[in-house]
Image (cartoon, rainbow, N blue to C red; front, side, top):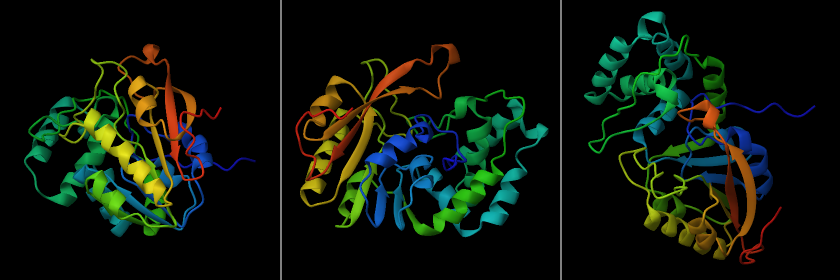
Length: 282
């Protein structure tokens, strides 16, 4: 019987739950896995490395992970209080959103971040240019409280260090014996399809270029790097030195479920043993 996969406790646009087998099969053996863009952590939850360095540029996400790691029982208990019928209405949601945007209390913001993730529209995480969370109410009949998934995450989190740094600084921490998996904000499928407001910072073409360059440099030092991204001309060009695997993926979060069509993605492995320019694997 195949081993059951662990689901992340957060909804996540572009989450890798459906691709963890393909990703894990292409990740080389190592003592530590480094993720500069950890997101919901599906790869972390479904791989078996001894240690993890898990990073994200979103401080609300990393604060939530650190609190869940340090005090799982009390945090889960406190978070569940926001999953009641009284909290599942627009007036309460928008009042709490305004409260969140004016609060500097890390614990309270972390509780609300989870609440928004399950009650907000499509589970999106989006901030405006002023850094204010602005996802609208989702209108779900009965939002799911992921107590079991949170407990699984908290238990495995003892193998991990969570940081909130630019991805360049995370690469600088990598050493021989580590492997890096990158799931960056994806290159847009078209010029009008860019989503860049995840953490009130854009991740444009220059950032995509910098990430690919860092992957080449790390692999030259003996540190393998696996990157996932859309299969578009830009990524084909940037990932030319890598071993490429092409995948067809159904989008899990979309405004209209009927329009969720398969899209082509790339897994690009930068490794000293795999630097065969433009080679396609499967």
